[in-house]
Length: 487
Image (cartoon, rainbow, N blue to C red; front, side, top):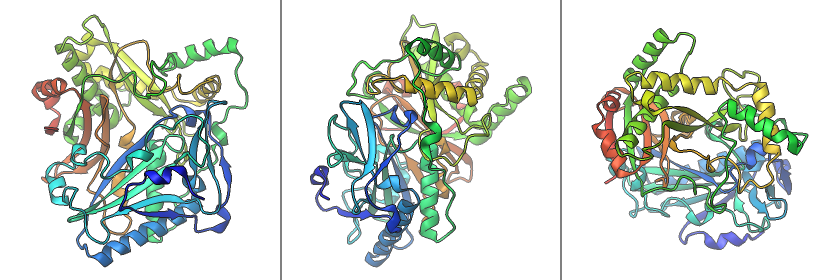
């Protein structure tokens, strides 16, 4: 079936519809979306993976295309909703996700298979530049027209693909980009899907995935009289529930600021572990994680920089916003292999003075861990009831505008263990977000750098002035080994 958006595909791009290899998984289907799936209705999460190729001939590139295509067909049988389109219903103000017919499949775009692309940097150049997001020109590696917000009122013949993959062959390697609509997945789900796709390509046993979203569907809409109590209970646990967007058509409207630049920063794992050990000695009742410590270092550094710039000079407190998942050690009952959205946006707050003090990272890490450990069955029950009370997710949901100042927003990308995404032609050297138009922090999985040191990479989008202060911040630089700023 022809889809109206197909005319927006760039010219010269090979298009493959990777239909489920199991015919029983094809056909028209409606897929359940829970309230947790609905909360970011106009967001496609995009990412790029960078692979070096020891051999790159026309035949070897064609073999890779076939390998990935076959693996996607098997994955689509495993998770049929990957082949769906997503649309927004103007009447119900709810998103929908469905397949239309037997020809639906996962969209795989391919460029450079016959002759490698010369309009993208070579692998060697990307490696020298730390695979920086700004090295990929806008629109060259993603189908930009298909990852913009969904227009209200369109049917599924005009909806957007739930996910899109684009394979770009370059001199010395390849760039695999992906875009996932947030109706479909959260960060932990993306990791599971890539691992399952890689397993299918390698001919290994399937990775078990939990695809029944009904466990996150609230059966009862709360009465209006109950909503305030729900919000108070969620807010007491750090959940960002008091939020209204100033511009419903722009999911980032509350976070827009001065133009941002990105930096790829390497943090010493040894230094982070030293902070973790210090916290364990001082606060044995608060078992913080390595991720908590890294988040605390970035939060305190950004707070010091913004205080030095006199931003929000009347603000006494500093907020950091981050997703908290139900898949946590404090809630072992929840299936960790769930495919769908399992996160609530939460926030931790501390006085600016405490964050700027020498013990700031310690206090910050403990505050973050307290929020995360609040997740339990009651948190889930209250949260599902709360999202069930929302009438219009386009004006009230995560990443909207809390009535307070946010000093740092964080993603859940640290859960993306991309080193395990080996499809059969080697492990990726790097995972990167696109260049971000909003101030945001993207922690990534740990790796070993060119000098054999264990590091954790973070991509920070902030104003140029903020970056300049961070690069001079002695406390912040205690933890970093490399700070590569966009020119």
